[in-house]
Amino acid sequence: MEVYKALNKNLVFLIVACIVFFMSCGGKTLEKTIDNPWERMSLIEESVPQVRFLDKNFNIKDFGAVADGVTFNSVAFEKAIKFCANNGGGKVIVPSGKFLTGPIHLESNVNLHLEEGAEIFFSTNPKDYPVVHTSFEGTELMNYSPLIYAKNKTNVAITGKGTLNGQANNSNWWAWSGGKSYGWQKGVPSQNDPENREVLVDMAEKGVPVAERVFGEGRYLRPNFIEFFECNTVLIKDVKIINAPFWILHPIKSNNIIIDGVTINSHGPNNDGCDPEYSQNIIIKNCVFNTGDDCIAIKSGRDADGRRVAIPSKNIIVQNCKMIDGHGGVVIGSEISAGVNNVFVENCVMDSPNLDRAIRIKTNSKRGGTIEHVYVRNLEVGTVKECVLKLNMFYNVYGSQTGNFIPVIRNVSLENVKVKKAGKYGVWAEGYKESPVENITLNNVVIEKADSIYLLKNIKNFNFINTYINDKKVESIKN
Image: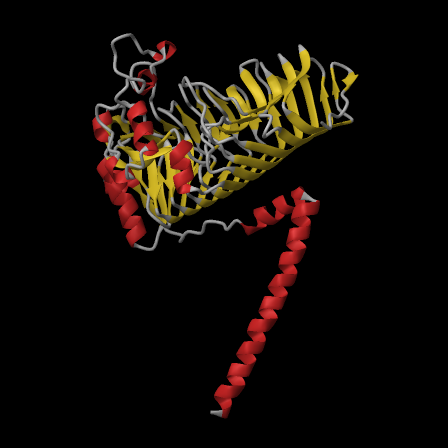
């Protein structure tokens, strides 16, 4: 009995000591968060766990795969992945060659590894894609499986020097967008037909359960390319991705994701390069984005569905990336109803006459959301078509986009940014009278050429520090 008493006393002492220690550390961390956001970024980086796999290799050819670009290899991929997972995990090797397949569903502890010279071609037949729990433009539904899909998995990766080819073009997936420049013709079904996207959005507004939002065949809502849904500890490294049907990298409701050294080249409709949604602790580094839409677009759900889920995207780090074509380099929105905070962008190069903006935040009073604590430094910007920084609370692309959810945009900082040509404006910011865009800082920003210095409406506390546009020093605005 005396031994147990002593143990209990020691346990109580240990618990109290731990509480004091973590309270002390928490206080210091909070101070760092307030005083220096870049120190906070470093803490986030250090906290993201690395994937780890057993040293076992499982070659898909050993499971019946044929590298002729014609044989359908879905069964071989499925067998190899399941066998790998059931034996503790490791690498599923895709050797050099051309492999045709339907969707690939990953398991925990599996690294899908494409050796140099390997190319996976994904079927363009919608019938090959089963209906799964996924998302379309920020609204959850049951729809075509993403080309590569993982749900509720941990410790999973896609790596290697090979290529993932979605084979999308103007004669298959892209035409579903309803855009004439992507192969759609009048009379051909598309996502824009009233019974398709509009019905999905209406279901979400009415609170229809996700399990009852069944789309798929005949509804023309394109699948995402790579989607990690409710996953933890994920790596995507070195692969090249081309010709995507829709959004390309889509972590949704996922945590601890590292995307490193990936090259994306896909100029289809809505071909966003990477869309973290309802996700946290995401590192995107050393990547090249050449896209038909936003290079990186951080999301958190659309309208009622975003407010239902209510998981903000946060702790997103973008480093050492190159943005070529796209609607924006690093974008937040427009599906942003649950909010976004703690975004860090550094050491990136953005340059293309087909890149519209460098940094963009887009929302409206139907989306709502609070977007705050966005930090950008050390950008080299060649040419952007419209402006360097755009902060817009009146984003409107699908008709009327007004409602009763006034958004908030605040605490955005750009420092050490050099721009050769900015298009219409250096800075474009529009807020509401009751919710101005506020606490924006441009420090040591030089824009050599822009048609106009800025367009600012309903803003508060715009700080221009050592900032020059068209060789003119820009003065701060405190109203």
